Image 1: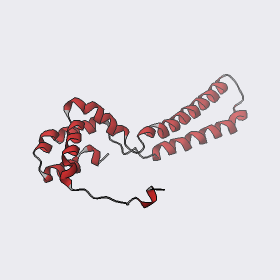
Image 2 (image 1 turned 180 degrees about the vertical axis):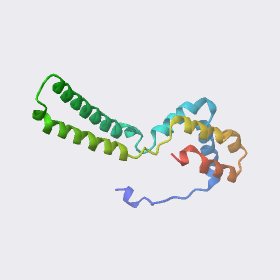
Image 3 (image 1 turned 90 degrees about the horizontal axis):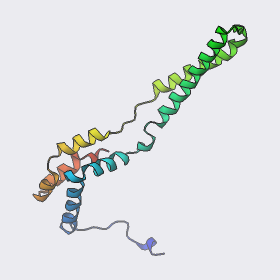
Image 4 (image 1 turned 30 degrees about the horizontal axis):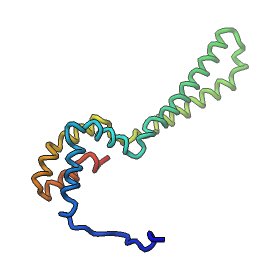
Length: 151
C-alpha cells in the first residue's frame, strides 16, 4: 500500500503557489461571484442543514399538545363529563409544559445568515486589488477577517 509510506506533511515555498491561491481568492470574492460564494459559505457552516429542524420539531410537538388541550376543552363545552378528562388533560398540559421548556432552553444556532456574510465580504474591500498588491500582510489580513475564517 503506497499511502502508508506517504509523508504526513509536505512543504512548499510560498511563491510556488501564492499566485494560484490569490487568483482563486480573487475569483471567490469577485463581485460577479458573490452570490455563489455567500451561498457556499452559509451552507458550509456546521449544523447549517439542521439550523431550524430541532426547534421546528419541538414547536410542532408544542402545537400538537395545544391542539389536544383545545380538543379536550371543546369536549367539555360539548357536555362531556370533565372528570372523565382530568387525567388526559393533565397529561397534555404536562407535555405542553415540557416542550415549552425545551423550546425556551434551546440555544439559538450560532450561524451566520447570508446578509452577515455579504456584509463581511463588503468589509474586506476590493479583495482582488488587495491580493494583486502582493503584500504578505494584506493576504494575512484578508484571511483573518474573511467570512471563511469565521464561518
